[in-house]
Length: 315
Image (cartoon, rainbow, N blue to C red):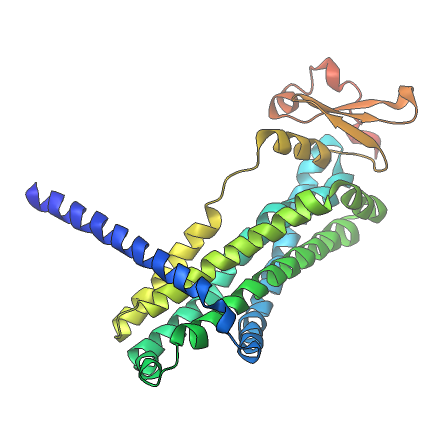
């Protein structure tokens, strides 16, 4: 029992010490970003972004294929297949784009940064810089951090754009969904500040987190081959957990977004309530009520509120 308590105490103390060292390292790095040269920053942006572009684009394309195919089969059940573009765009821009890009970024660029810094530590190159009066934080770490900070939002944007194009190819070109409804509903439902801005902020935060974790693990790695390999593995694990650990969408915002995703026609105004989203058309006789909550979906066949639901067999 004593050995177990000793091991737990040693683990907790070591965890707090590592968190403290990470905080000191992050503060020191952020305070010395101004000394990075522009040429070094551009070189790191090219290194990080160029080598991650292919895997980001290919992954985004196949994620768009899957979203387009599965989203169509879900939406066509309720006669809302024309809302495919809205569903794919909101899913990619708000959630999947930044999160999946951060995971791929951690696995590709994060491990490369950790291995590079760890090998420089093992080869005593960082110690040699200190002996020559060169600050390794400003010369080595700061340009890589700025490069990751700049490249991550760009890669997330490319991922979302390629994913939307993949969903368009599957839904419009292969399945036959109306292309005009696909793009018009997406344009009317996606908000620049609440949706695109939200995804941009997430990608920036994920880029900062992944870059700090990768640089810290490489800088604090033991100068041995085993130490560098452990640091690389730790970078992937910690950065991946950091990328997927985020607060969920607020209930009110999620309800509104789910209602917008179930739209059938574009060019109309919407008002949402906790139980339904009502489409208001210029003609009062053409008003249609679309249930947007899971409970409303379950009671779809027997609910009077959904009497205006489009006929599935109209095609």
